Length: 294
Image (cartoon, rainbow, N blue to C red; front, side, top):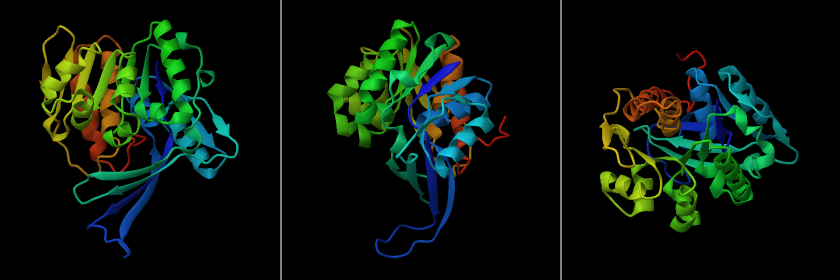
C-alpha cells in the first residue's frame, strides 16, 4: 500500500473559449471535482489496482464531505480529520483553449499536517510526498517529521516538488535539503531547470542524480525521461491522446510510475505506466479518473 502525503482539495474548474479581458464578463463552462496532488495520486493508484492511503484533512463543510465521499468511490483508504473552524481546501482552475491551466489554490484545512495524522508505517510499502505540503509553512515541520520516520522505517520516498511558482517561495536551498531525504524525484522540465540550473533535461537529470538515486523528468508532449544512479538514461514518447485539460496530468503520471517502481519494477516499464495514465488524465476535465475508469 502506498501512503500519500499532501493536499486534498475541491477543484472549481472554468473552461474558457477566449482570452480573459479584465473587468469584463468571460463566459465559461464551470464544474467542480476533487483535487489536490496527493489526493489525485491516491485516486489514480486505487482506481488502477494499487492500494493507496491518503492522510486527509478537510473542513466541517459540504466541500469536505464531498471530497471524502469521492475518495471512497475510488477505493482510497484515508483518515477523516475534520478541522473545526477551517474551510476545505479549494483551487480555482482556469483552463484555456489549448487545455493549459492556471491555478489559484487556498490550502485551507490541509494546513497543519503532522506525524500524528499518520497511521502505523509498517503497513505501507512506499511514501509519496507532494511538495505543496512542504511549501505550506503550517505543515512543513510535520511533513519533515513524517519523512524522517519513513526513512527510519526503511520506506522509499517518492517526491514531487510542485510548480516553480511555489518553489520560488522557499528557494533552491530548502528544496535541495528536502531532495536529499528522498529516493525518487518526479518533476517537470521547468522544475528540473529551476533546481539544477540546467536547461537541457538530460543534463538536469545528471545533476539531480548527485542528490537522489532516481530522477524522472516529465516532458509533456515530448514524453518523459528517467535515470537511476549509475544506470543508462531512458527516454519514452508521450502516449497519443486528446488534450482537454492538463490539470492533474503530473499526478496521474506519478501514480502510474509509482505502481510499477514501488514494486521493484523496471524503470522503463514505470515510465510507460506513468505516460499511460497521464494520457488518460489529459483527456478528462477532472484531475481524477472516472469512477468506472479501468
